[in-house]
Amino acid sequence: MFSKHTFRVVALLAGVAAFSSLTWAAGAEISASGGGITVGSGGGTHGEFGVEAGVGIGDHAHVFGEFGFAQIASQAFQTSSNGVNVAGNVSVNLANYGAGFDYGFGSSKKVIPYVVAAGGVGHFFASGSGTGSNGVSASVSIPVANDGYLGVGGGVRLFIGSNWGVKPEFRFQRYFDSGGSLNTYVYSAGVFWEFGK
Image (cartoon, rainbow, N blue to C red; front, side, top):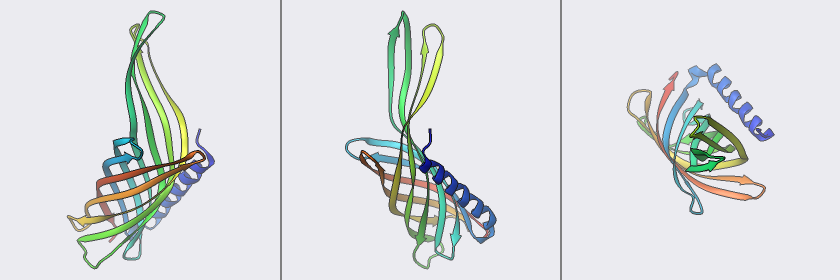
């Protein structure tokens, strides 16, 4: 079940989306990206993808809402119970719901480096599925934790066309809960589109 923090973040994202649609002519941007997330303390590197939608503030800044997903761990299994062999897979996943702000530097219209800060809620959940030798299949998803996160980093918008291009980015992102914290390093490359300019 989602915590109160998750509902607040979802409400914030809905507000950003509504604000973006009302001010589309002011320079809105959407982007989709893929890359990796490296989990600290020996957690390895895992594939990550995400989407963002935001709106420009002045000539240099954007506010945005974001969603990201990464599979942190995955394990195949085989077991037997009451004469039925079962094979399947279990995984631990991370879904981020957040919002942020970036600020671009320089006078170039084609290459714009920027710094970024973001925060929100990371929803950790376990999922699994299996099929028995008797043909019966089952799947389940179990919430593990909802941890707040803060991230800082930077990237660059490289315009290929007049209003679109590619956007490599790196962030240090830290997740907080009552039992401690988890450090991650997120690197991504994506495609962005700007509207209303």
